[in-house]
Image (cartoon, rainbow, N blue to C red):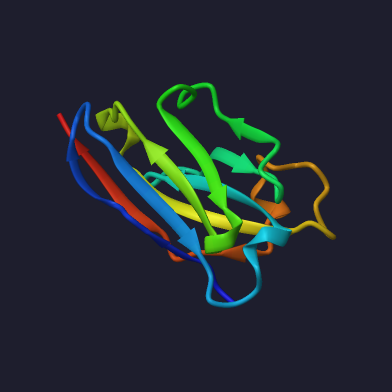
Length: 126
């Protein structure tokens, strides 16, 4: 079972994109979902996470106020709304999911997550 991340593309600085993460398989509503990003040659970095109910949201400081995670369990989809984009936001964005039965609270750690998407490239031009 794999997640499907989509919505990446090329945008000018200050612009917006909306990323989506879904799966044709298990109901995403039972999973904590996180977004990570990776610049070539660098470590994959935590961006944001949301619990299965959507009540708890976590955002890294450097994206807070610009990138916002949300979910629609009826649509089996988690979103990352990206506003006021900067060139330094350029990266491949990955979504990841961890079933609520396995969740240990370490939403910012890659090893917390059991399912990963293939990544979607976001390029922000200056």
